Image (tube, rainbow, N blue to C red; front, side, top):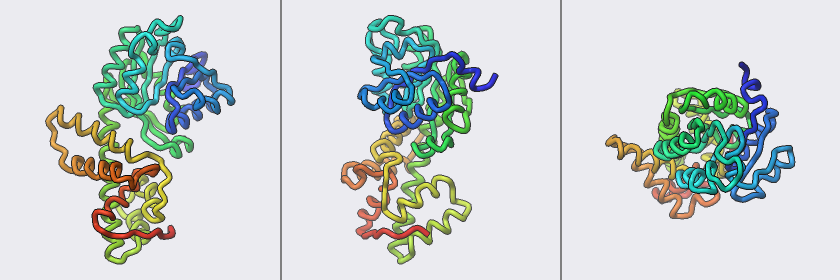
Amino acid sequence: MTNADALQGVEIAWVGLGRMGSAMASRLLASGVDLAVWNRTPERADALVARGARRLRSLGEAGACDVVFSMVLDDAALDSLHDGESGLFGAAHPGAGSARVWIDGSTVSPAASERAARAAAEAGAAFVAAPISGNPAVVEAGQAIFAISGDDAGLEVAEAIGLAIGRAVHRVGSRTEASVIKLCVNALLSVTMQSLAEVAVLADRAGVSRALLMEFLNDSAIGSPFTRYKTAPVVTLDFPPAFTPEGQRKDVRLALELARALEVPLPVLATTEVAYSSLVSGGLGEGKDFAALILEVARDAGHQLRPEELR
């Protein structure tokens, strides 16, 4: 069965239209699926509705669709989707709770995914954790990837949706393994950004061009898609937000909470959490990408960075 076959005749309710959610829903709509959309701020859905998506008036109406795909900020936002009579599975809307699959693409704790899975099971629906790796630009280019785990009954449609949005889907388990994997990946990204910021400030203080450093680094064994993505902000000091410092700090804290619960010491990540907290509280990261961490590192060093041109 092809991905198109798996989604034929299936109405998908998309819940959550932030920067990532909007980019993902746009890709899905462009693939030709039957898409309905809901967001707490209704005007966020206007552009998709203008392109043919159906506007949903409530979470209960979303829960009456065949499949629900949610993309929200954090644990509290995910909990709110299945909480009470006005949630996806509440009785506030006729037909609410008739969805057969709930897929969640958010970066949340495994515990939050477990709570969502229990709520879905009580309503007779399959639940799949399907966190995405990528930023809005990566999503728009069709290059995002997904990890999915959960009930067998939902994996096929989750994979089909993932491949309609991105380039690869990895099946990683039958419970909330995907949530764990996403936290591990984002933790490593956070640490990598801190290390990159530190060596860039060190080179700059020593009189070496950051542009030259990044050119060499990206051609070396340590170069990666991530270091190449972050070369422009590190060099030019322009930080259009692909992902905010607040979001990165949230993910670091979720990973640290999981580590504490499992009694796994993560001293490097703990140091990184302090750095992102300083970036957020000090105001240098406001309205910027989390690569603005280089500004915090430079401030700690008492060093003034100046914008450079890319090579």
